[in-house]
Structure formats: structure tokens, C-alpha cells
Length: 209
Image 1 (cartoon, one colour):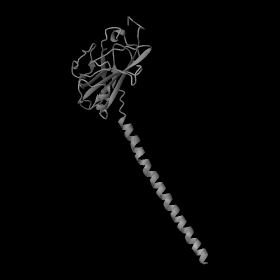
Image 2 (tube, rainbow, N blue to C red; image 1 turned 90 degrees about the horizontal axis):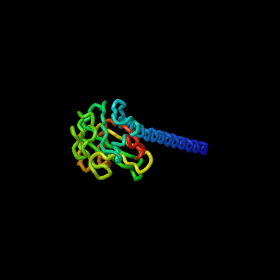
Image 3 (cartoon, one colour; image 1 turned 180 degrees about the horizontal axis):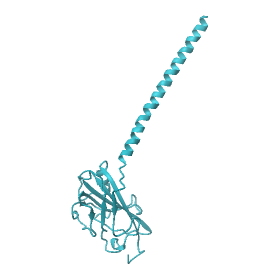
Image 4 (cartoon, rainbow, N blue to C red; image 1 turned 45 degrees about the horizontal axis):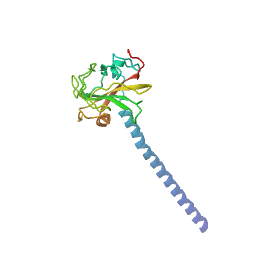
């Protein structure tokens, strides 16, 4: 009887330990899931895409060919840009024009501008290649080391040129020497919306375009 009683006590201790471990494991599993769910929710909140915020140009259609007068084979002037539908709370706009197909690490940036007032809804054709934009805003440096716009000039093949306009919730503390990386760092966490326009260019494909 003593041996039977002692055996029962051992089994009971084992069951208690098993239950305790199981409960602890379940609690850890639930707790570990909570941050992941919260992170996923935070990411979805940070993704501020607004289909009403649009960027257009009378010079070319979305995903269309950029006329040569806006490139190194023409007058190398900037195309007119116009936008509408900026999100509520927008204080300034920032602009980056980038060629991801350029044969260099990270691509080639053709235009950087920022602190464009929220009241401005377009940039006229042939923006001056100096620090200040007409109507307000500052132009940073392109990857050619110059201020203002630098037209497409692909060494070969067809390249894509992304015009990205960012609605920002305040003014940026940047200088005229700011480049793409500086601007992207400054607007991180302050972008209310983004509008995009992509154009293409093939060097020598259309001299009369």
C-alpha cells in the first residue's frame, strides 16, 4: 500500500508540473504574438497612399516617352509638373526625379526640390537652375553635382525616370546642397502622401520629339 501511495504522489507531481509548463508555454505564445500584431498594424498605418493625390505633366503621358527637349539631346529644360489632391495637413512638398536604370549603384538622381509651399500646385516648364524655385521652394543638388533639373541622358537602352512628389507635414531644415539621401532622411516619418509619374527615354530614339 505504501509503495502504491508513493507512486500516486509521484504521478500527481508529474501531472502538476506538466500542467504548469503547458500554461506557461501558452502564455508565452500569446504574449509573443501581441507585438507582432501591433507592428503589422503600425506598418499599415504608416503606409499613407492617397489615390486622390496625383502628379501629371502636359509634356508626356504616364509611362510615356519624355520629349527630347527635356533631355541632354535637346534643351535640357525641366518639364511642367502639376499636382492636385494633396492630403489634409500638408505644409510643404518635396520632389525627387530618379533614374533607377542608370549603370551605377543606386541609380542617378536628376532633380531634388523641397519646402515647396502647400499653396503651390505646379512647377512651370524650364525651372531656373538655381537654389530658389519661382513661387517658393528650394532646389538641391542632382547627381551631376549641380542645382536644379538635369535631363535624361541614358548611355544606352531605354531608361525609366520616376518623378515622385511627397506631401510633407512641415518644413525641412535642409540646405541647397542637399541631395536625394539627405532629403529622404529628412522626410522619414513626415510623409502624408506620395504621388508618382514615370516617363521613359531612349537616347537618340527621337531627335524631333
